[in-house]
Image (cartoon, rainbow, N blue to C red):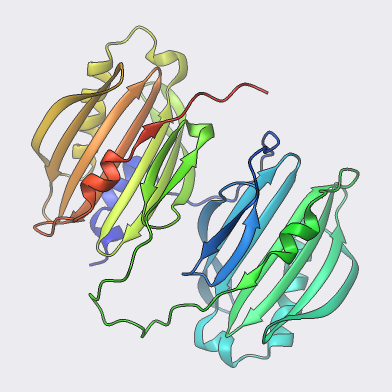
Length: 342
């Protein structure tokens, strides 16, 4: 059984629901840096680390996974989308696929095309076009390579064009994608662990690959609150960082009581039993570390209450198959300075 299925009860509590990101954030001031996704076969420059999400999308009677990489830069959105259509895509006419993708995107955006031209990137065919809706301008480049559709796009307000549009679009390059047959099942693959920082949620942690970010509204004793999750699947383990701000509802409450309740909820949601737990701290902030098992999985977790915000770090692995890098992930968690309000 797949790990996501085995840990469904836990992930229900963390609500791993992949969403499109559309709200504008404050202007970014960090330097542009190259971002590599060897798994998805591309490299591009972003002004900050992109939020990574994935969605299931229907096409021609089948369902495919769309991976999205998004950065908000002031009033502009910088986006790269990757969708692998498999053997059917590899056998299809790339020009027909590009035309269909372009028309579908323009319709979805409620826009009309201003200009377009055929382009190429290495051996990949492509199309570049400019489009506008009533409020937004879109600069888009699409490529088809081996049945995989890549889309790089900048969207910005009609009268506030993004100055670095060309810089972003021209930074896009294709990388060799790993073959499904490249390694036998169970063969370890090299991991390039690196820190990922999320200033808006006030933390950083080290992951073996770019986490999938998601957010969902959940109902708790505090009312409706928004849960943010950052998830990586590494071999047979699931690494999850979750953040939930309870705002004023946590004021005046004993942090140990809140942490104890969060621990019991997590264990209850996986229908598990507690193996061990102990109180910990992160600076002046109260925390708890615990281990739990259910019939098929082992959970290693740490929770911290920072003001009114609950942070949870969880490693879920098959029962009796410990994840070798659990401590590496759990120990890497760091708090970041609060962002100034804009």
